[in-house]
Image (cartoon, rainbow, N blue to C red):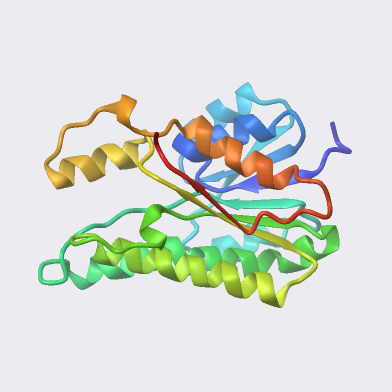
Length: 225
């Protein structure tokens, strides 16, 4: 088990992040990133070679301390995220700040801190983006702005670090707790069958990560049928 490549998955306590961890488990050792110790411990107990990586991604000091313990990293999956919605007329500045802090700044800072470990392994960075990273709909400005920025971050990283593979995944609506909150905000009904399963998004991640060495999946879009 110790000779397997190492993957760090943020947001691994539930939803898409947990699904990614489960699908990477047969081929990778895992660090499960998140803030909920009990939830991370539960996921880790289900996966051989997995351990919790308890950290608040928006706490710069604790993030730097946790990252400093990783010397070599084969895969970094940014799955943690938030969705603060609202119109330009009504969304407070806190909605814009929260989206940018979690969806962009934390992603950029964690990547920056782990670049030496990723370079050592000629590793792979995966950013779970959103359909909102391509199109900003009415009422989605604060969230979409952060996802456009996350796409720009990944594109810049790919150009700057040619020895790394960098993949942006753009899922459509996915059956998660976040999606339930979004639908409640929109005032719509929630029909899980109408959305992607987290496992489907995880499959896209595994496809990119396990690609043969000459292949580089730079972007993958996944939509409900």
